[in-house]
Amino acid sequence: MFEQWIDKSDPSVRLVTSQGSSLPADLGPRDWKLLGPIEPPAEIVEKVQTVGFAFFHSDESEPAPGGLNNSNAAGA
Image (tube, rainbow, N blue to C red; front, side, top):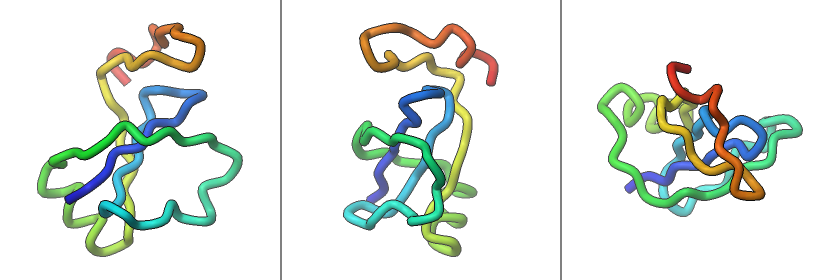
């Protein structure tokens, strides 16, 4: 099982980790929010199993903090 995290300042940026694992310590000043379980594609699974995490950009525009939508997330 895997978990998907969203960057609160840029909702198009996603992070995938193994379920229950800690976030990597060297992510910088980003603030992450857990979105929940995900069934990622094979290439993401392979990277998580090798490195411990994987980043990707989503075409979906998730609600940003405060209920605002990030219109720049589409087509990222």
